[in-house]
Image (cartoon, rainbow, N blue to C red):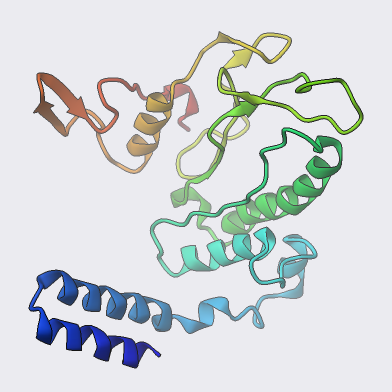
Length: 232
């Protein structure tokens, strides 16, 4: 299939000598080379039984979050610099009592296993694990009080956790009020998180600054401070 695809692109390139078509061919070739260079990464047959069990019952189910967590560790072992995992369907405007226990069962054990597995292999010190979403949820139900309630979006405050890569373990930064509605102590802006993560990656977020339309922009816009309380 890929060979035929290349032939079609090359035929189009002959008819229309456009550098973008050549770039497209090169991108497909690079993607194929990346996927075929380490075929063993998806072969879990050599993983010890106790490691597989630590990720949970879904670890050998392709596409599950447990399988993806183990795949992330295997990719990190092979030097992949950036790995992103998704777990969808947390937008619970309804049906929360039934959905949340199921989703926590799918994510909690594999996430913990990933951190422990990286540490077991000596990879955690230079691997930064980040868990988070784009906002929190209200601590009260959305709409009428009922048994199958949900919760609305709540961007005022929410939680992220980090592990490895120079992060101080077992440490909390920030505090909400007793209702979990507003921040009352040590608020962190997303730019602060970005500045801190770049610092852990060896990047000075203030070093690259450029002028545009009368403003001085940098990697964290015009904001961001390194959160030293997070650093080991």
